[in-house]
Length: 196
Image (tube, rainbow, N blue to C red; front, side, top):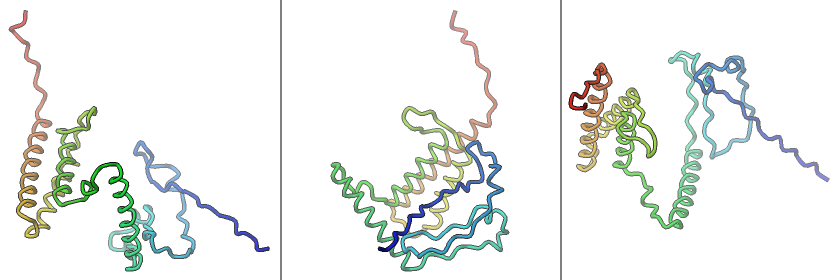
């Protein structure tokens, strides 16, 4: 009778450098990076990423970039993604909604960046939540939208171009208003002379 190969399972290792408070983990620096064991190649698995410690220590010129996935790996991953998306679309259709509502368009992409920047400026917030201001994040989101506008110049439909320009205009104006409000010193409360 043939012996059954015992399942060896897997081990999860926390390689994050920082804890939840943002402090450097004491055990993170002590962990040694083990070389990966040779395994059978899997077409659908992503390329392994370099450990964070190696990236942080290596100079930019000497940084080892992992090779891109092969054409076969990319095709297998694209096929798996399409299959998973079709299954999700079928579930959405069964729930009585249209799967077309989930399709990503350029306008929806721009709108998501617009909404993100408005939330970062504290001008919008989740229902029941408090507005939170993230000026640096808002600036980066606005700059991202601007970068997309520059890189896509000449490739947008008139509707997309109009949406892009209006979004950038509104976000830049809102950014200026919020940063000006934050830089002003607080005004002392003026007593109401009409109350007695």
